[in-house]
Image 1: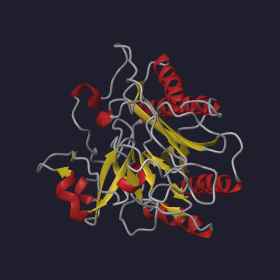
Image 2 (image 1 turned 45 degrees about the horizontal axis):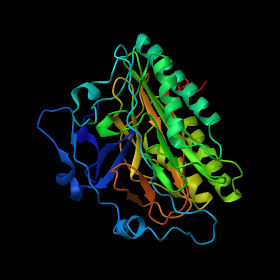
Image 3 (image 1 turned 90 degrees about the horizontal axis):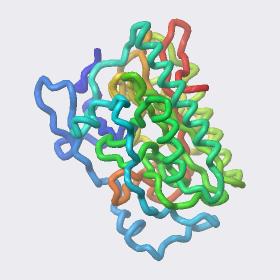
Length: 351
């Protein structure tokens, strides 16, 4: 078992949406309330990302980006949250309406739990695959949310992001410079965009979490290579996972490959344990680190590297969710939920 206090003192992890956000420990008192003996850490949102917030998002006339036809991402209109039938089981954080915390302890499963994890992971993968077929110029990300929402509830599951800490939609759609947690809205996708779609489903008491980055129409070689390398980082990281392997090996192999291609590795957001809880220990760092801890048999967690062409620093929009690179450079992400087996790792979120 790993407690919250086992995370290295120089880091804290704040869950925002469906991955974790890391801040330096000097702002710990502003982000957390921690009661002695409590197994959960409650979250207080922080808007400390960059002094460029006003420059980037309040001066609406600054839309053009240098050396590209792409324009800076702007928010569209957000439709109301979509209803979920009453008979569908909700995660505890939806009913309680309390800010979710980080579950302490690893997600380690018995045979029955493993089968449920396989079922939730499989459904998440199928939903993501379907969402990917909708990606084309002119499609609004809100339309992707509608399709994802409907497919999840049609299969008797709950869309995990919906209502998590106040998140208003059923999927995250992160376009171009958006690092993560983009809220689906009325903005149509444009030819040359890239979009990460992050799907999590809650089925029979277990979460399955996955994401992928898709091309919209004709994408330039710079974007294609970023996406290719990001996927390679995830694949290489999964290939080394097995019982007894140190978690910090994940960060090293991802960072080494990113460095080879001169890409940045986002450090603010991390992977996490997943299963009965949406987010739990361990915290999976995607960059070089000296954190302690080893993988154990029948454990489930996510690996979800985010790479950038330029700055790795993020700026949060006024919606308190959407995080974009401060220089508006492209960002890509891939994610799988994996199960540690005797022979290595089983990818649970694939069709």
